[in-house]
Length: 119
Image 1 (cartoon, rainbow, N blue to C red):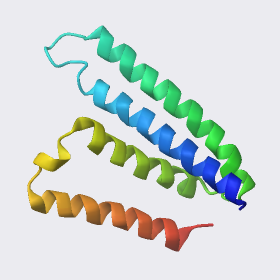
Image 2 (cartoon, helix red, strand yellow):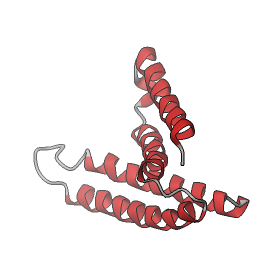
Image 3 (cartoon, rainbow, N blue to C red):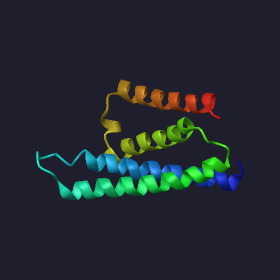
Image 4 (cartoon, one colour):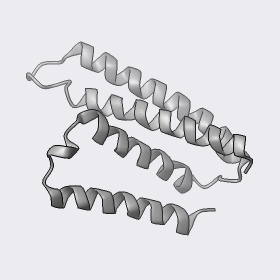
């Protein structure tokens, strides 16, 4: 995979994951007061719309690089989405230390799978 192609993949996947993660953060606020918050619905939908659009474009460059496995394509997005939710929710640093360590280990496990099962 060329350097430009690799950079495009990472930029698009990071932006896609972060946009989707904003969608998830706003979605968690839709029913906060036991009534639909339409601004939260709109922001969640916008995050997901931008996220899936960027994800679809990233697939072009992943495919060019020989990554055609749905598992590999999805795991990259999944890792970025989890990181984005943790960042945008702002709650990670309020978690107990053990939960923080487990979260880092889970992310490391995703990275392990990415490297070991990559096609």
